[in-house]
Image (cartoon, rainbow over all chains, first blue to last red):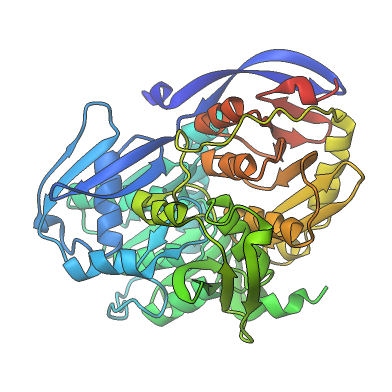
Length: 262
Length: 262
């Protein structure tokens, strides 16, 4: 898998029943990625330095700084992996908003956002299709079974986009926001049509996570854990089907249940 | 406990074995708190609107914008709970840094920070004292047993500061950063001496969490889950004892083991 390069060895004392034993353990790498947009330093993010280009592209599209993947002329990742350069046709207003709002988000892996609930102007998602609960249950199971970095370090979040033809795209990061930005960026770079798709995330669904689904027109978002009230309201308002506590054959359906074929 | 006011009712469909049943559930409130410093809007944070004053004070001290609780002349929370006003003698440089760095942190509940690893100039924590692993194990147990909002919503992080005389101060939030800022702010407002103390957190220990311990001179940080490599390095460099995977009588000791009396 090549994941070894994101792992760093540490020597620890394992304590158990008041005895300490020296032990070689691994921890996940955490680096500061610098994002340059049209030659200017725009922002930095603390993340696992993998899928850096997808991360930057997904983030900028989540924030509406870039509207369309075709507005990007060029993107490069530096050799040390800690700098992404993007040349693109950008929405200056959204970029200014990002700084002006200076809203610290609550969720793992986020940071600031200009797209806060109530501020997002995107048409209601009317996409109509149905998935069976069994599909969600079986994909949730695979989603967790296949998280190698999590198994090794207990320290990552994962996101996956599932297309109705069975295609899946996944990404992992120390932050749940980053994992979503990365997986969306990967789909954009591959030019996959995600109009009818399901976003699976390992973390809680606070409003910013739902806003990312809104911005990327992802119609269904599924988590193993809980949404916040603002997360539920945001999904309700923008036509996103929100599912929480998806565990085994159980799940809680919070909004727009019409897409789930029970 | 008065926690009801941070809970919001939602009607959901509980799906199990392909059957849906309507159910009245609760979710945690998530609000945007606006922080005004000396009359100017400084920043907003997505959080649970409780302990707002402690949250704002803890955050500003984590970022070194305010050096000492006595530099604060006045702090007020608006009636709707969504605005904190602080009048204080501030470090302009740190405030500028906060914006200039524009670093998106990876951890839940964070946001931007000017205090990134390698940028923090605080003397090595030399505080010398010892605690027994049993103390940590029994406090971890209480820490989880007493998290009411988590039990109700599955959607909060918790932080606790334990003083050697047995005093504990706790705070909860949707974000793990916020929970730390709140608990530190509460200790500052109460003017508790935290020189010899243990910070317990429910979330993973990425570098920003450790930096908060560094900034507040908290000598020991304990989590039930994993640190990142940069978290370990930061603790090592600044004299913080870092303990992860504290579960039952087991725990992993990553740095500065001298404070743990095995």
